[in-house]
Image 1: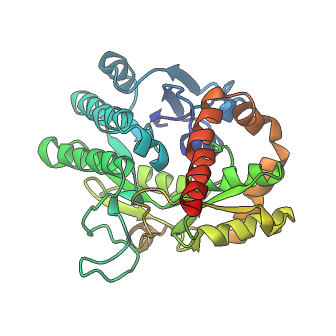
Image 2 (image 1 turned 30 degrees about the horizontal axis):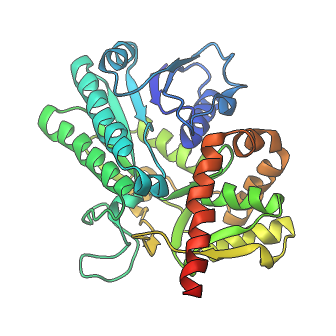
Length: 352
């Protein structure tokens, strides 16, 4: 039996991971530490809450005393907790530095003090910046590529990523770092591309596409990501290493948009081009051959099948996302600022 501390377990990927672990290893003990900021949602785990091996603790990973008390109780840590949205980091970088860097520092200190057996630090492919070789040739990023983050979010994750590595090299804290490509699936907060476009399309609202919509990402179904973390959690001899996780499913924003509209049988007239965001990375993609060669993991969910599952989940769980889109003032203010005002700005420039 393993005793796990999962930070940020009420968020999108964290809640899917907890759900995966409870189903796969029902005898494991799980503590879920989450601050319940705007994207943390206990509705994501309402059916998991009664499980005897699961416990939720509301709190901030920047609270050293709380973190230390919880780390004392476990053997393994899976660290998801972070501010994650690029757009929000452009509007307010400070909270990203505090949670992503300082919060990781607090967690690493507790792991060092109490002899944690393994800490999996969930980083991101955003740390690489545009996917290319050191010679500037466009290709999926390798674990050995330089980190060239292009947003405050990416920079905060790069800082946490390297801080985690330093605790391995300096103190021997058994850290494993993952850099995953863009996740999609159930329970994703509807500010992110796929749930935003699915729910807008269901409401016959415009789908706000940044710039020309040709920016590409490597898309992975969240359950495949959870399986990869499971493999690393149980693997031996991986401490101090970085592993890319990706599905080799590169799609542009416009391609994703077309898939969503096709599944929902909605018209292309819903596509609405808005002013591009600053520092918008043209291509994110990772080469995941290392984890496949070393540990035998690879993404197995068919992209089209995963997209259909995801779209239909939002169709069938309207109450879940309407609580956010219709009742959250925070979400409505963000949407107004991020898309409506951006569209108005574009129209003003065009008419000048």
